[in-house]
Image 1: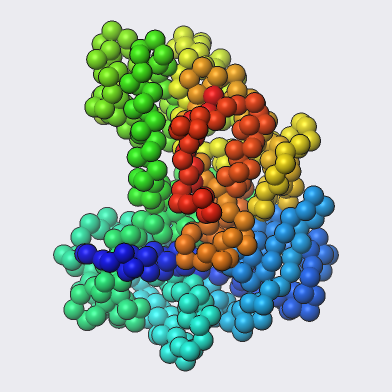
Image 2: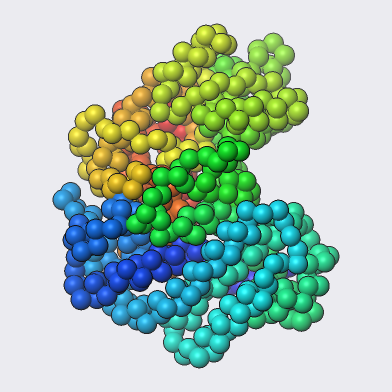
Amino acid sequence: MSLTREEKRAFRSLLFKHQDGIAITAIIAVLEQHQVFDFLATEKTSSVAKILQKFPQFHAGYLNVALRSLASQGILKYSVTPQEVCIETTSKFSAFQQYTTHYVYFNALFVYYYELFKTPFQFPLPDSDNLIAYASYLTSAKNTLQHDAYFSTEVALHLEGVLLAPLLVYLVYHADLENTETSSFLEDPSLQKVLELLAMYDGKSLTTKGSFLFDKSYAYGVTTSYTPIMRHMETYLTGDFLPFFEQDRLGNEQHVFRGMNVWGSGGSHATYFNKFDAVLVDIFNRPLSEQPKGIIDVGCGNGALLEHIFDLIWNKTQRRDDLSSTKLILVGADYNKEALLSTKRNLEKANVWAEVVWGDIGNPAEIDEKLQTLYDVRLEELLNVRSFLDHNRPFNVPNQSYTGNLLSTGAFAHRGKQLHNSDVAQSLVEHFEKWKPYIKNHGLLFIELHTVAPDVVAVNLGKTPCTAYDVTHGFSDQYIVELNVFLEAITKAGIRIDATHSYHFPSDEISTVSINLIQ
């Protein structure tokens, strides 16, 4: 499939707006049900604290996350001060209120997809008439409101995302689909009807839109994997959400479909790992005396990153010539004991020598002690690597007051309670202070996720999946801060950032991912 640059840009924009829809639809449905929007329409200017006074049934932390997501869509204005979080309606708000009923209607789809994802793959799709009804509804609304620019360019695409993205993920991930052109599922009349109504199928084959979105379906994987949160948004905002932070009797997480999450992450992160690899090649092409004794991956998961790093060193660096005389120590550390077993098993299968150790990212001293006891190596003698992990550390209440110059615009919660942005920043500073003694020799190389200020996201709709990041991470008690806040925290911890190995994506204005080597 050959697309022009303009076509690629348009389809990527569509993909991002689909993810926006997945992120905000359930939020809108719950807030509408509780008449929060009517209150805001009357008040015009308010705050999270005042909204909670009017609606005490809400959990402050998650309500804050919800309101910020709508600010990222330009529906509200969101500002953080040292004293409070201010909320204002925008010129877009009144137009938005006309269409909340559409979001409420499409919110029911999360119930359907939640149950679908929980069961073994089945095809033809169960209750496919239901999907046809939603596709027909959307087609009718688009025809009726075709001259309404706001509905056509935003609302309709949000609703389409709620219907289409989980469907594509289900087909491609759960069916292990590799080639849409030869797949028999396209012969199913009900699916053909849904795809045809969504301009994905022309009666004979997939359209250009259909081919692109099927090919990029992994990009929906991470957002869609949080369907359990979207399905239970009412509970998260007003009910007993704590069971979702526990594991079921089989050890599975309740708030996310982890396998789908890993699949989506793997497909989406290839671009970042190219830069990551370049830093590793530079390090392991240095004189042997300047190289670390090995590598430790904290948060090793299934060991895939360690396996990749070993292959990279073997095939792309001069260190390969010294492996026989100078052993390269590889260690996988993880908080999850099942992950450690998976790492050990997968690396042995790949014929990669490695050890594993239980470790908490928030307690490097304990990891160091275990390394010395078990493997006679110090944490500071290794290159530390990790990917998309520091924002997912358990929150520790800071010991000191924050003295940084920057205050994040993020919305942060811990088990439903609202966290002050200065505490989140100071907790990050103290987190890096713990790591400082162990990375001073060979550094920490890591990839991290970031938020972007809502007003910036609002004028760049279709250019970033930031709204989806903020919602899924906010409701699962993760702490993504802006790139500049993140870098300031590292500096405040007394750690140097290697400017020659510092990258951010996709642009200076919208930096949602960074790679840094620090020590």
